[in-house]
Image (cartoon, rainbow, N blue to C red; front, side):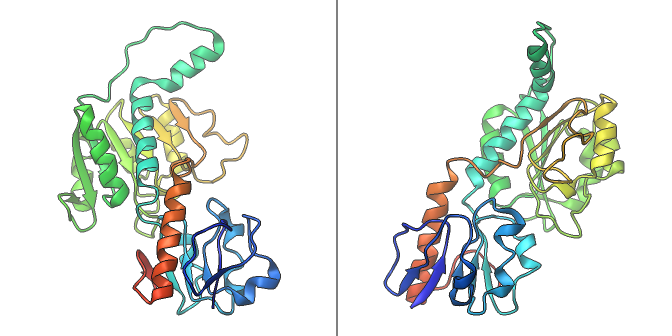
Length: 297
């Protein structure tokens, strides 16, 4: 009998799978040794995965996230790790588009005016006719592109390989000053850490918008604050560095920025999609079929 723990205690389970009691937060310490298939609680942060090294019978980790850089650091050797590719595509993509619209149309200024009861009619740029870069062109990047296709924009996607109609990232610096909107949706790696550094931020077009729905450290925060406070660019950030962003951090009070608290994938759309993926993976595991979205094994 395969023992599984997830945050949902009412999954449709195949024969041969038993679900441990769950409080929706974390498995009991007394159950750790018996867990073979583990699904960490979604948006549980470091605490949701901290006990993984203590799971002596563990064979599979099914992350509820698309990005698994944190789990890779503590994954025991020989334990299979799968991500949740596809689960968060629509939700994250729609937030990226929303932040792009909000940044182009000046929602940060309008929100400040509303709080002060001030009617200030100002003409802002539009998302329509914008030249948009999507940096990272996996499932979510492609979904963002599909959603943006209705907004009369020009889209250029960038990847390391130049696959699926994207350009190789080698071309990014040459084209960077031409973009009105730059959307980041790359995994956090050594190569993407501070991908948007001071030099690249300074090379952005005056009035351009930077949208980060990837990971906070993909952007150099101090350099971004300097550019924002100059009034030269705008930003929409669903992720920050540090994260959570502490009270009093200068990014909170920077000009021309809209910050959402890492909610890109965490909408009500996650629940049915997350459950469906876990149920399918458990059915595959019970029947000996290959699992989906294997990242490491």
